[in-house]
Amino acid sequence: MNAHPPLLQLQGITKRFPGVLANDRIDLTVHAGEVHALLGENGAGKSTLVAILSGLTQPDAGRILLDGRAVVIRSPRHALDLGIGTVFQHSMLVPSLTVAENMALGAPWWQRPHRADRARRLRALAGELGISIDPDARVADLSLGEQQQVEILRALARGSRLVILDEATSMLTPDGIAELGALMRRMAARGIGILFITHKLDEAVAFGDRVTVLKRGRKVGEIPPDRMKRAETPGEIVEMMFGAGAGQDGEETPPPAPPPGELLRVEGLGCPGTDGTPALADIGFSVAPGEVFGIAGIDGNGQRQLAELLAGQILPATGRILLDGRDITRASVAERRALGLRYLTDDRLGEGVVADMPVSLNLLLKQVGERPFWRNGIEQRRPIATHAAERMHAFDIRAPGAGTGAGKLSGGNIQKLMLARELVEGARLVIFSKPGHGLDLANAKALHRRIRDLSRQGIGILLISTDLDEILALSHRIGVLSRGRLTGIVENGPVARAQVGRLMVGMAA
Image (cartoon, rainbow, N blue to C red):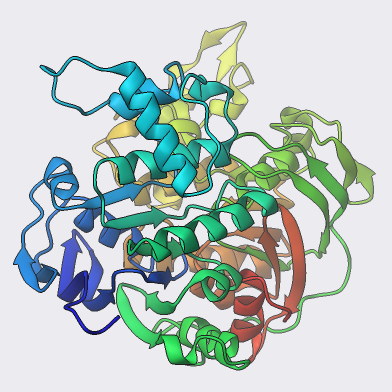
């Protein structure tokens, strides 16, 4: 493996976006015939590296070497010409076309497609890799695992020597994951280098010849091939990802033990999944008055479905939801709101506000038609303006005026607008979905103070977040959601980070 220059070398790769250092001097090596697993939680910098290697963006500093030769990957087309093929997390195939037609996409426009020849070559390549694919099958009729195999075949048919698999297992069944692992081994045996990007420890250890761990844009460790199969390796990787001292500087200590009582009870909650979301099964937990109950986990493991089930936006297939002992499983959104349940979505622009409507009316979206703001269906401008001024002052919503379109506000001010709308009188339980996502440090800290204040007032908080530091800074107890199941509940404290981290990557706490 080391007789020739590495297939890929990254040296000091750095990439900045406004307010974010996405990649910070990352070094990484992939050899021909090696499966190199790149491991890290949300926000670790994995996706930025994929974008750089795929030619979608350029690094601000550092070098990329292929076969020991420095290159600049100018575009996705150039990446393909250099032998770098990327299989993204979400399918890039055209569902209405056949497998063979999808394979032809991207070919020179002046070349006449020879369908029979292309189908013959596709079958031959698939046979070499142990894949059974019908070239005439419509992509929409294939399973997610089969679609992924087609994307891998397409990359190899274009001469890719390095294949990047970006969160390739996130939508697969356990059998599909095992099939992908076997396929990677067959590809490696052909001398193909594979960069396998994942956030699941068990897959990284099972499939990888080497593991690199990223955290907050930095490379924090690497496990070389001669140390991969040791019994202590999984523990070492967990320590790299979630070990002591990994938290944010200056964060407040976790809150004390949760208060007694029970405000919310969830029993055996479940709903079917879709092609893009996992099914939820047997979710159960409780939240006390004044408690912050955190739901941690890598994004895409059922967080949105759980929030929407509790808010009443979708109805469960199984289980019960009780608020103050009252069964609200089939209650509408309005009925739950009247009982004191409030929900702040993570989709601020798409769902949280109506972008073209003024701030004043966005503050009343869930009170449309109610007195004193409407009378006999007629909008009462003075009460609406007075209410807007009061809420904008109380929640420090910074806008030119109450008539400003909500879509013109910053992310932090949209978050404050949603808070001002939901935290009106009668709030008993507030569901926050990724509340700090996309906020600058000042706005995030102000939001955290607001959550702590609500807790001190006896309001229950369900905090759903993919930011483990946010969860640890605010929560009394922490449940971990993985592949649609609650894999454990941890009391916050000195060892909570490691316990939650182990549950997040599929290990016992």
